[in-house]
Length: 159
Image (tube, rainbow, N blue to C red; front, side, top):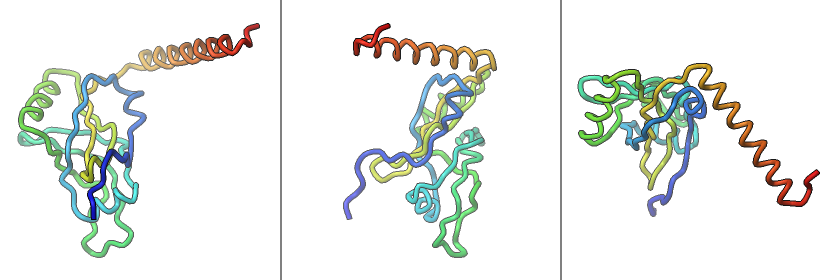
């Protein structure tokens, strides 16, 4: 059977981009069990309340929910277990250093399959204040309004 090509997104964390200012992103592998991979291939996962944390010089993903595989037996996995992230040592050290530096956290943005391998996109992020969120929403609305007016003008429907 040939390997899958391309990128197939399984789950994305839309709320993370709203709640955090994304500074940098990293692609990490995950240490998974067989039933977790099968459940992910079925397109079932949730990144709500998930975060990455350092323990003993390694990075672990906490709070990610992968439901039990429906055809699994007694070998099924724990849905919210802690999963080890697979990164290069240099990337791990860089992420750990930046999070200890101050005010930064590691948040998963997406879980996807890249050429058949399960990957997670980890973002180095800084939490937004509520007024920052309001400013972002206002800017997005203004940009949408500008694009709408420009589109109408381009079609000759200017009033």
